[in-house]
Length: 132
Image 1 (cartoon, helix red, strand yellow):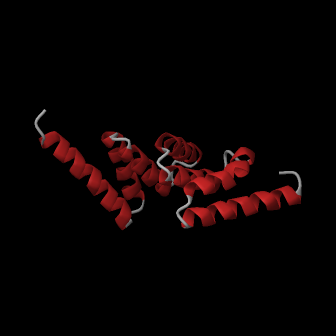
Image 2 (cartoon, one colour):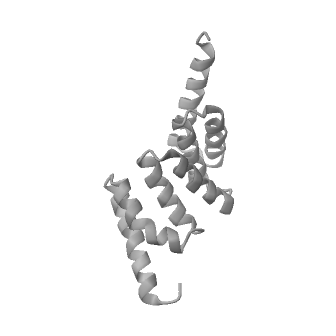
Image 3 (tube, one colour):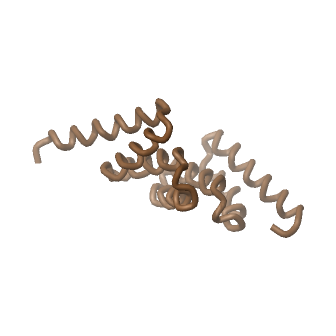
């Protein structure tokens, strides 16, 4: 970024998008985040926020892309792995979801990561038990 006013505007847009996500308004958040995404496409925090908004608005392929981009930049981001796993799970791609959730839970054994992994493992077990 070259000028302070432009930087301030992007910061305000980012903060507005965060607030809108917190208020369960992901589409509005994506609209607010648009200029920030355009200006800072390789910023991890921007991609994480976009990924959350995409996930919360059921734009699962876009969420997958955003979280994948974060992992390209920082493979050790456990939240991005968790969120990518959730996006994959919602697309019915359970084996891929399991792999991401297993890594997230190994990196940081938060209860929500463990629960998400358990959900996927249970779904896989049910799918295998059902007659074809």
